[in-house]
Amino acid sequence: MLTFIRHLLGSALKAFFVLGLLLILFVGYRVFSADQEDDALRMASKQDYLDRLASKARPANTPNIVFFLYDDLGYGDIGAGAADNALLVTPHIDRLASNGVSLTDFHSPSPICTPSRAAYLTGRLAPRAGLPNVVFPSGSLKGLLFNTLAAPELNIRLPAEEITLADILAASGFTTAMVGKWHLGDHSPSLPNDMGFEFFYGALYSNDMQPFALYRDREVVVPAPVDQRLLTELYTREAKRFIEKEAGNKPFFLYFAHNFPHDPLHVRDTRRGQSDGGLYGDVLSEIDDSVGVIIDTLKQQNALDNTLIIITSDNGPWFLGDAGNQRGRKGNTFEGGMRVPFIAHWPKAIAGGRSETAMAMGTDLVPTVLELLRLPFPNDRQLDGRSILGTLLNGEPTPHDYLYYYDGETLFAVRDQRFKYRGAAGVFYSTDQMPVGGPIPQKEWLFDLRGDPRESYDTSDRHPRDLERLRGAFLAKQHDMRDNPRGWQ
Image: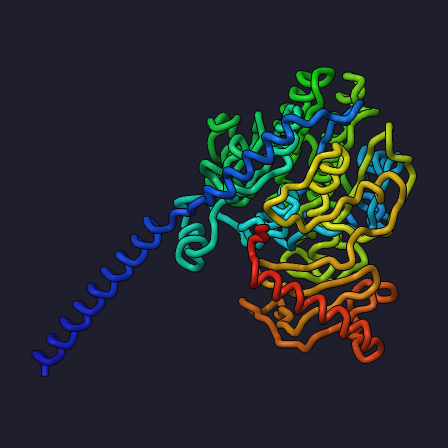
């Protein structure tokens, strides 16, 4: 009997050893074979397009552009959405809103950060831009699990053949800079300096990912772990220096992509306890003061009147923050996950004190700038956004028939100005005591957002024609994405 047990244990150990060896070989294969390739034909086409832009004359009095993109900032945290928020005070941002235009029905392109940022910068929904999911630091355990093993077929950086807003503006004679969070890949050829930014100061990832270091261009200047209590101060200093250096020369583009108010939250010790909104309120107060510094710097350089300032968020709020009168938060395609604040301020061209209800999305930024500068669209790829310049300047209605709500590569919903169709899908459910939750299957739903902004009631039986129409748009978009996922023309 003992001999049999020893034999059995020996066989089990051998099997365990073989399985372990196979697992190591499998992981090694995934790691070393996960090499993303760029499309040489599209790279050449991209360069041809940028060369064409370089030959175009800029319109007279071309504005500077300052684009603030915050991380997990809720619709109800600032601006028009914060009308009922008595705990947070953001006077500098509110002043921009009161002297500019707020869009009350503006949406991030995704409910999570990486794909949303890719879409903002390319004008293409994240599946089009080739980066539909969050990417993690190379060499990290999360990167191995989520990027290499779980989905080795997906990209781990923004494809180099994508054309960014910075590429366009650099080719058009702007000086381009980025301060803050990149999160579109951590190695060439997809770093900020590869994708149109002449200057970069910031982090390559979210502030909850490690190693969290700060770079100036391609070199680490603040090693990990960064003291994040100083993060807003460091970012503001670099943005201020850039404006002081470039204002009065040729037009400039500053992409200020903050890591906050993403969790974990940090402020200088001397700023803690100043807001009735707790630490989150302290962070927003410091962010607001940072905006005030940028405004003052533009004023000092006589550049404020002819600078287009845009403030928005990459998705809805995470654990803290105010999603406004909406269902859901970051990570889902209900309005609370993707409807975000939007403020545009440009004294020379935008009449202040306006609030517009036209629906729009972050993919509209690139087409809007192209129209503003009277530049042609790329002819080899589809842009999903539409120019909202008429909305910003003159209050024109939305240029969209529909907006499409993607999470990853999956289309979950489509809407027009009034109705929102959600395809049959699981809706996440959990309780506080459950260690994990999961999606509970639901049939298709139709929400009447005009009377039900919180998406509380399925009205598909009350509006059968609208149900059929939006279902048709939903299915047509799925078909289009299957046939041409990257939108090449």
